[in-house]
Image (cartoon, rainbow, N blue to C red; front, side, top):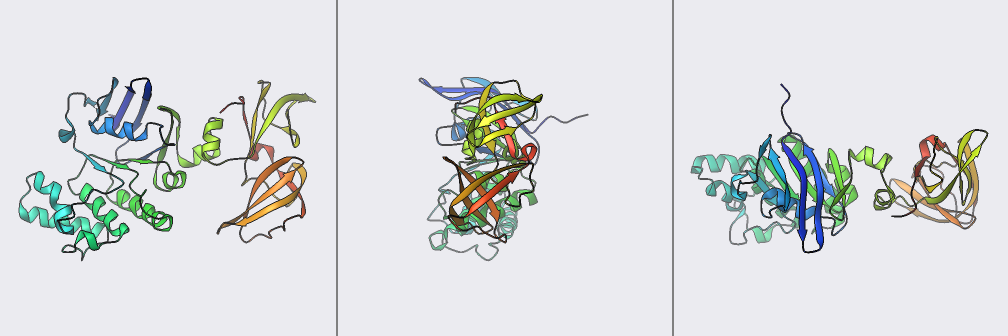
Length: 352
């Protein structure tokens, strides 16, 4: 017998006056799956978390846990955990007491509390921190204490709302990997809200990308990056090589007229649209099927890769090169090449 998904969201609606914070939101989360809720400010991410937690009531729709509706289940009986950006640690309690708080509320005996707190602090690499004052911890250490406290009561679902938003980028890049490893190790089912694409892609098994209360796309990080469903998704991901295009037929083949010339595309019937040219699929080796001449106007070193801005007439294209590659100099004439099947995606739309 096939088991139902752990969490099912069915046609959720939530409005505040004229603002539709959630509009027909539906998706499922499997047992042990980490799903990131990604989107810009105002997209409905945090509202969705509050509705799932039971802290907000949807106007319509339902939330199921293992096939059973939670519509009449109050927040404290859902068995869900919440972790926020500011951690909400108790400053008058030490590390042990903070992690033990939820266990005491659940009525566990002292021996069980001591065992569980020790297990959680070991999990987050704070095994010797039981007696430490919360106020003496670094931001990263406080984040780990908050995570240990959220995991301690064995939540059926852990919901994290921008949990790394208050730490600097270098620390965030390290912590997001640690959080994923901890959630993986505990096989914890989780919803993770963030506006940061790299954070979502690093941590999640699947990503739900939202815009203005609606779902724009659901998929694995690789699926969403390689095949964005709309111009909005492409732009949100920072894919900037977007060229207005008009469909042409040449020798029975679909081509699009763009500011950098005619480009072959897969069979298409829509007359007008926008072409995405992927920055990681353009090469300087001259081996691609399609070639175009340009001039380097800017280069910037990004660590593992170098980003070059290439002017082709009045159009600027972004090209990402491996850091170990030979980097062209600014002002240098170059020939770009790419294989249209790998580098091109056509959106039959002009708007956002």
